[in-house]
Structures are given as C-alpha cells and as structure tokens.
Amino acid sequence: MNGLALFAAAFCSFSAAPVALFVGLYGIVLWWNRKSWRLPIQLSIALVSFIAAYGAVRYAVGFDLWESFRVARAQHYEIMREVIGRSVASAYLSTTLGNTAALLIGTGLSVVPLFFRGARRALATPDSRAPYLATVVTLAVVCAGGLYTMETERILMFAMPWLALSAGVAATLSDGAAVFIIAVAWVQALAMEALLFTLW
Image (cartoon, rainbow, N blue to C red; front, side, top):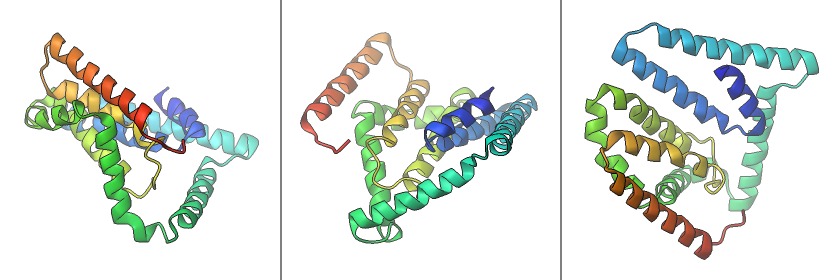
C-alpha cells in the first residue's frame, strides 16, 4: 500500500519524491540498528508496488509519470530563468541558502533550536536516530538538491513537520513545554501570515 500511496501522491506533486527518500532512509537506518530483514522486505514491496502501478498506468492509458516529471522540471527551469534573469544553475548557491533559511524560519523559532538541541540525544539513541538522520538528509536534499528553486512558500512548508516531529522525538519535553512551543509557533505563524506578503 505504501508504494501505491506514493504513486498516487506523485500525481498531485513531485514533492512526493522527498517523501519516498525519507521512507527509504528511515528504513535503512532502522535496518542498520536492528539488523532485521523485515524492513528491507517491506521497502522492496513498496518499491515493487510503485513500479507496478507506474507500468500499469503507462501501458493502460499511455500516461508516463516520469515524462511528466521531466517536462515539469524543464518548464520550471525556463520560468525561473525568465524570472531571475539568468540560469538556475548560476543561482544555485543563493537558492540553496534561501531555501535553507526559509525552511528554518518558517518551521519556527521555537522548533528549530529544539531540533538542534536534541541532536546529541537523537544520534545516541537507536529509536530516535532513524527519524532524525532521515530528516536531516532528506531536508538537505530538498534544500540543496536542485529540485526546487524559489518555491519556499508552497514546497518547503510541507517539509516543516519533519523538523517538528524529529525535534519532539529527540528532546524530552514536559506537557507544559510542548504546549508552550506549539503556542510560540502558532503566534509566529499568525504574525508571518499577517505581516508578510507573497504572491502565493
């Protein structure tokens, strides 16, 4: 079912790709910690079901998801080239820094420090190592992988919950502290929505 769900999600947005990356990395780290073959088998089943769905749709109705992705990326690069007045490749560094800053600021001034504060505990504890490492690597690919360019409002916002969830796993919080962090994040989100202007 996971593979079929990812295939269905890919019809809505190519941002399903980082979700697949996260699931794969999460499974690999868990397997490394537990040395159980159950996880690789589950991931293989998900991959096979994704490929089967891709093949069935392609040969049944002629829709090629990969070709759709390629065309969307080509159009995206062309639009961005017109918007910024130069090639996307020449703006790679500034785009990567902008994506990273937007992700961290948008995630919240309360959540991000908690995420980094929990790094030592997360990496030392097998149960929290998997989601933490998978989150760090996936978000690094999202920000620096060249897949997204200047789409922080509608792309990176979907990656923010990964930071929040990983921060909660990595750091021990009382109920009161958790409520405070949620309240601060809510106030920040409300202020940004009211004071900042974006074309989206």
